[in-house]
Image (cartoon, rainbow, N blue to C red; front, side):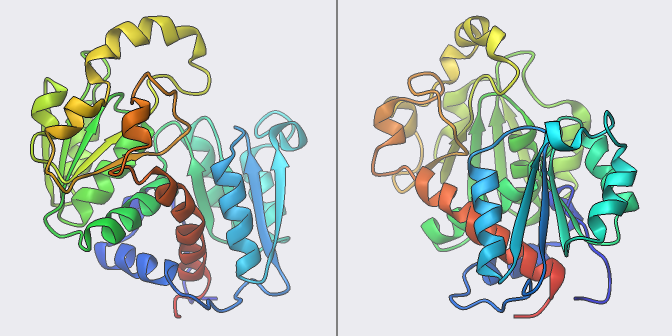
Length: 301
């Protein structure tokens, strides 16, 4: 294991060179088995398909065993406080991954853990998704430098981590959201602090014009199902359809972190079209989880 303990709670816990290093490690065809004889403890306060499968498989590919615990088995701050759980699971595995509702829970896990803690999603951040997104962009376009990424829709945790990652790597980040669903000023400041350019647009068409990457996410997420009728009306002009995609650069790619509500935030023609990279993006969740674990636990290839 590396000399210093590192956690990943948000993408800018890493430097630009470290992000690039993780992307390189993610593409190793024969990674070292740094988890042989141990494993990773995964806490899921919120259920997941991609996150659980990708991190479990990444752990196995590094020679380790994943132990996945659902919230009814752990009960963060109900059955046992986050601090005690961190102390407990630090003695069982080489790393802890946690998918939670409130961001402060991963912060408290990290503060009390003696092994790396990885934020697998919180209400503020989704850094492991951002790593997969950046790898997908690099593979699709052959570069990251100077790439323009346009995010349209709800300025949520996925958008925030994506924006921070893009800015950190000197990319252009554009965003357009319905009134009341955009970034807070503090979020825009956090994104811009990475050094890239950040632009906010009132309408989706302006945001995507000439862009290299068009990215969207569900209009309503887990726990927001009661708002879906209202949100469909509010977000209708931010749907990514064939006409909106045509306004981007001719070589642009479309991305979505999934799961998709088909016909809402994007049409089937876009999701399944030749410019879509949604399945590469989903599969890269496993590859970048492997690269991240390699970086945190070994630091060398």
